[in-house]
Image (cartoon, rainbow, N blue to C red; front, side, top):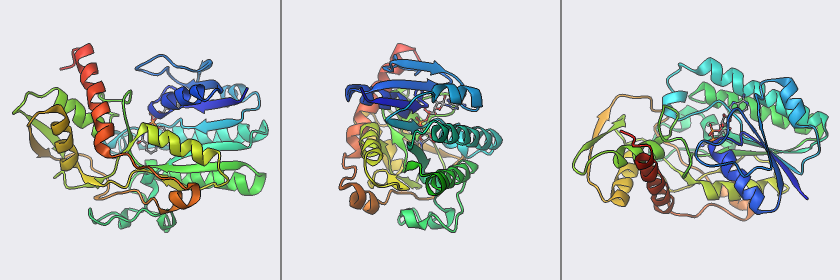
Length: 323
Ligand code: NAD
């Protein structure tokens, strides 16, 4: 039986990935500081543990796996990453996880390892025009990520690539662009724009008002979780190492995103623009490389994934009587 290891299996993408690998017939071990928050894990073996700890890391990479996915990171949405308040933790925790995981994977002769980098590595100077951001893979240097989160991801990409060059590791690096879907964090400070806006619309009366950080003219693209997993497993099993964008090319402003959610909710609320942490002015995935490498690229319309996500958040709001 094929065996997979998912690090960060209690998180949003990791918990969905475990389900997908199980449906493909893998035996799966998951590792995280916590169990998935919104449903039972599907992993055969789930280890609660801290990957900053070398001994724990060594103990969970104690056998040969066909596929290792390293998704564990100290991360969150703009309210977590762009305030500056958590920079030391973000850099220290995620770098230490990657240093440990990669080294023990190498020492246990587990060559194939997937690393989830981020669109946040792209230089701020290429993302000042909301209508024309540049995020092709070859534009990463000269580096100027706009957050310490992005700098850590860039450092770790280089770490993985150096283990590939020096030790023959078969690394696979994806740069994810804003992944969203059901069973993701939707309140508490680490949620991202689609979940935060779904929550705000779901908890506001028709005719009411919701707050948007900034003028709402900043642009982004959002990729539904199923397509993220499709791209990730395809990359993992291909002969390409990346780094390659896994994201949607359907760019919208945050105001447009809010309007799409209102339409799904069949509500009309007004938008109150307030100061808040923003990140770059414009960002979009560039999918030329993934299409060339994998003969595949994401294609699902944003609205389809938003419908599923909004309805899941609406159910959650009712279930816990969230105010
Ligand atoms: P998430 O926060 O839901 O999942 C990350 C998981 O890592 C969490 O469950 C957390 O508990 C776990 N973790 C953190 N520190 C740990 C430690 N010391 N030991 C063990 N586990 C630890 O985030 P996600 O959205 O599922 O993202 C998964 C990966 O993809 C992350 O590396 C993230 O940086 C990357 N990524 C995500 C997005 C996105 O839009 N979701 C975009 C770009 C990159």
